[in-house]
Picture (cartoon, rainbow, N blue to C red):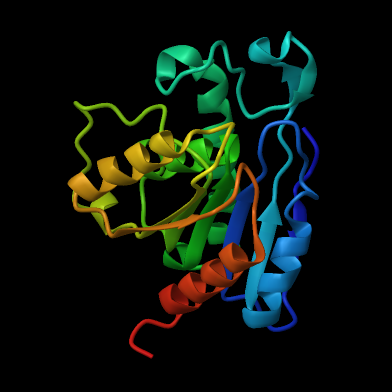
Amino acid sequence: MSEPLILSPRQTADACVIWLHGLGADRFDFQPVADALQQRLPSTRFVLPQAPTRPVTVNSGWEMPSWYDILSMGASARTINKAQLEESAHTVIRLIEAQRDGGMDPSRIFLAGFSQGGAVVLHTAFLRWQGPLGGVLALSTYGPTFTPELQLDAHKRQIPVFSLHGNRDEVVPYALGRAAHDFLAAQDVPVSWQEYPMGHEVCLAEIEAIGNWLEAQLSPGE
């Protein structure tokens, strides 16, 4: 697997965002977004990992960067390769641990992901990572491992989440994104929702909202 792209801030880093790209993209996909956000967050490091290239069943088996194989279209874990999802979650955990071991307070480490990358960070934050986190940014994504019987413990219910989705999304339907949000809200997770008149993409207003949210999480009480 390729090494992650690391964007160091102008000031000494005291926060970090680990940001996963979507299916078929690469670690450079969100570099312009990270560069823009660093203008507002001059002490925040961005870590942009690269998914391995592998066949994707729903795309006729073509090889492309993918955090996990998608076996069929649907919202549940039955439609994906769960072992590959777990591998990707462990990749994220290793990145969190590397930041923590380098002196970063885990409560100032954020996970962000677009589409398939968002599914990985939701799974990692709420089912696999054992420890505090600054929060999760869930962009145009869904929660394939959020099941009705899943009960989050008190520590997980303290992780703030910002869910953002296009209401014209033709790839990850709006209803799937909203279902992930509603699952977290029902578990008393501090989750907020913002939707945009767009498809499966990112818009400038969304980046502005993400910057506002990160600033608020990093400067509580100000």
